[in-house]
Length: 475
Image (tube, rainbow, N blue to C red):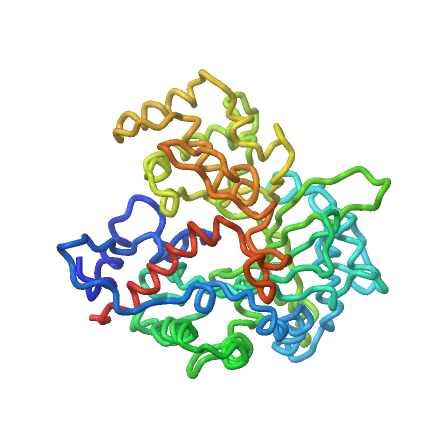
């Protein structure tokens, strides 16, 4: 398959795919799998064209963790830009930061943040599933808290051009990982801003996004960290010519498609005498509340964690009224989960089944899919086995559930770390509950470390996707 046909092949695949991997209008967005990254043509050696002529430096063009560059991307810079986008109305940057964390407190929360979302809304549930309060993280909402907006520094910038839909309706996601610094084992906390960048010329399809791909590719050839820092700063806060800046109030959920999100990875403990609490991952949308017009107020609203069904729905004996519908739907996803490729097995999850949070630590808990699924046998086990036989797979039902768990927030970050997922595959290791860390890279103290999973498995795939697109002719 020639690289010049990359665009056409992806468009055809989008129409015909049974995997749910290519996103389209009305579909729930995938957090980490989808778009062209799932449809990249794989050249056949000796049959296709000559070897690649475009070469991407992963640590310059896909995962930027150099401290000298990231110094320009701290928490205050991000929140100040979002508030400026709202014409300075409503909350100040400090208040917007505190409002995010006040969602972890029971109502009424902080006096100056009245009327905002809290964990006790809807009886400590969200989407009908448990949403517990987290007072340790909620303490950041207090005025005068020692952990504040200036406690958060950028530890990574991530290029997710691979998430661009095959129809080019947007140009993928561009992320900033903020970590609380200094860090300690019992006081780690992260915010990940995941902006979806609009395509200013959607009629051109993916070709409208080529300037973005070219921008990131160009960083590979720039040996000067200060020069790369200025370019990235402009891309994120000013925008390429004709493009909106990445960091914009409309790119984190405040748009008609609810595209983009902010995710948190939480592990603040309550103190030396407090009982330990598990690593918890959550998702938020930044929305503009105009109920008190003419001034609109930006606020973070808790959202479901995507591609992350509530674990209890895997229990064959569940009494949840949604369990039967979920299990029937899950059978339809067995074929895509059975793909024997760590980068490409996948499943779609209608939002009605997505959990409110993801616990990556508690063994046997609701988010431990394999524990919930149990040893069997049950009609659910048997139905998965029958579908595996139909598609000619030698995987077991437990392998399929292990793969679904690996794609959940908690599974990807820890539960499946270094564990088999069937078919001779082992899920790659995280870096102790995170993929982008606040710790020094042992090979280069001038960088923050990334996980083995990113370094050895996922970034090479994203490199291949970007290089393949760059070599395409656009015809």
